[in-house]
Length: 269
Image (cartoon, rainbow, N blue to C red; front, top):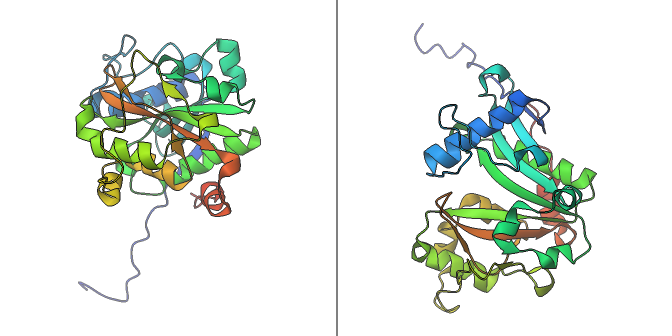
C-alpha cells in the first residue's frame, strides 16, 4: 500500500568513522589526495611539490608531521579516497629536531618558543565537502583533543586562512580579529617584517561585530569560541591563494565550558 503508515521508516546507515594517526603510505596518500581536492581544486593553491597527475597536495615537511585522519571505513584505502578529514601536527620536540615549524616562514614564533611550554603546530586542516555539516568535524576535534591531552600539550597554534589574496576584501573581519582577539603580549607572535600586513585597517569603533563574524571562516570562528587568539599581522600566501592569520590557543586558559565542549566525545560510529 502506498504510504502505509504501519511500515517502519528506513533506517539510516550510521556513519562509519575512525579517527587515528596515519600508519602507512596509503594513509599519507589519502590525506594528500583530500588536501589536493580542497586546497588545489577548491581554493586554487599551487606549489613546487604538488602532483597534479596523481592529484596529491604535498610538501617537503610531510614526512616529519603526524597526520591525524578522519577515516571513512566504507572506502578502500588502496584507492586513496578513504580520508575525509585531516590535521597535520608537529610537536615542539619534533620541530626542534627538524629545526623549524611550518609557520616559521610566515611568523616570528619567538614568544611561543620562549614560553617554555609544550607546543603543537596545527596545519593543513580540511574536511571533505560532503561532510562539513555533519558530525565529521566533531569526530576530528575529538581526536585532536585526545592527541593534545595525551601529550600534555599546553599551546596549540597554526595559520588559518581566508580565501584569496585581496586583503581589502577581508578588512572588516581582520580588523575585528585585531581589535577583539589579539593574543596577550607573552604569546603574541608577529608576521615577519618582509611579509607584514596590517590587520587593523578599520578603527575599532565602526567594526560591526555580527557582520565581521559572518565574514570569518567557520574554522576560525570555532577557535575563537574556544578562547583562541590571533597573532599580529596577516600574511599573504600567494602559493595557496589565501590570506593567513596565526591562531593561538592556550589550553590552560580555556574555561570549563570551553574545555567541556572541546573534549566531549563525538557520537559513536
